Length: 175
Image 1 (tube, rainbow, N blue to C red):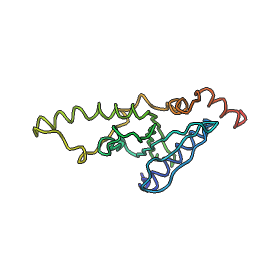
Image 2 (spheres, rainbow, N blue to C red):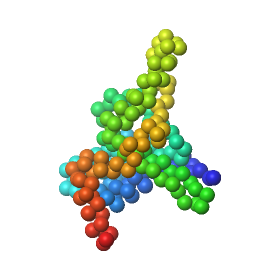
Image 3 (cartoon, one colour):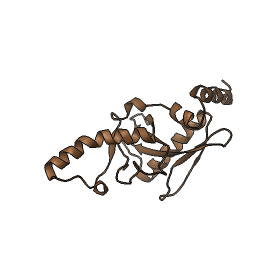
Image 4 (cartoon, rainbow, N blue to C red):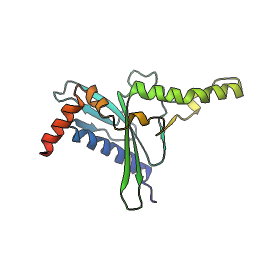
């Protein structure tokens, strides 16, 4: 099965996340470039609150977060939310898509829970802690499955209920 080239995969994920939020009645804007600090901004109805969203897109099973490597677990300017998007090309030329939506605190906890056993094993083997700048943080879909399709997390983050987003989305589509 053909895979999407990585330079297009990131864009595809960011556009899909924007599309899903727009369908829920949220105004969003994407940032472009390869040195940006955030992928997407979601803005409240009255433009009183904007939240930062980091999007990670995969075609397999492991998301590379690099949370500890980049110091995002301690950063004051870290994203407010993370959307992990998995897309898999099917034989019939359609795509299987899954979205996992987490707050920054939730993804940091998931990454910590994932890393702690590895850190303990590394320390037992080498007698010193692993250098975070030389490791790669990953999470599988299994690690984040409880956050699948939790779009209400972002809606609540900008001061809207999931129901209000669904009602607005229905009104926009005429259904």
